[in-house]
Image (cartoon, rainbow, N blue to C red; front, side):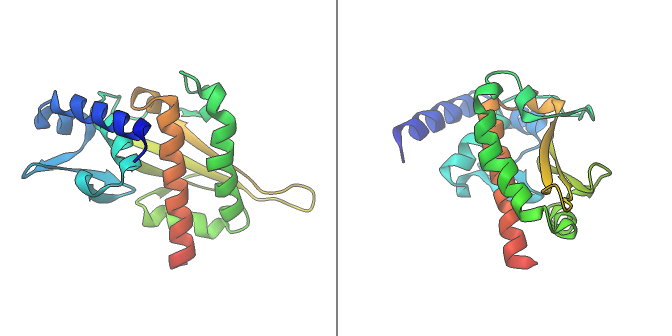
Length: 191
């Protein structure tokens, strides 16, 4: 494990240890049983101890934050996330938007099927779209506009504006990338 991950993981565990399990579960939607935390990730409950290091760091940051639980219903592009998103926006496009659009841009039905497999709900944006609670109180909306003879398909991955109360700009890139690659993997293996 690289030293940056080790330091981040250590700090995140220290913060978790400073909070009671009851508080962590109440504020994040996690579950605590027999000394283990469980968290919903793309509609599947996962044990914190079984997650890889990168997921653990993100989940710990989420679990130790008291964010806004009720989505506002106002969607926000990544570039509008405060705290440095303007610096990470090219990375977001490269790691999230492009792979998402490449995979689902010409296969709108598969976006809906994959979204529903992850507990998402179809919505009315673009030519195909779904909103998925990636973490219990962190919905992300995935939108595709089909292309035509003159334009390539395009896509957007948008956050409810409450996302900024849960995770910093850098963490939101990682969460969105993890979710998009999970969706791509599901499409390739199941559809």
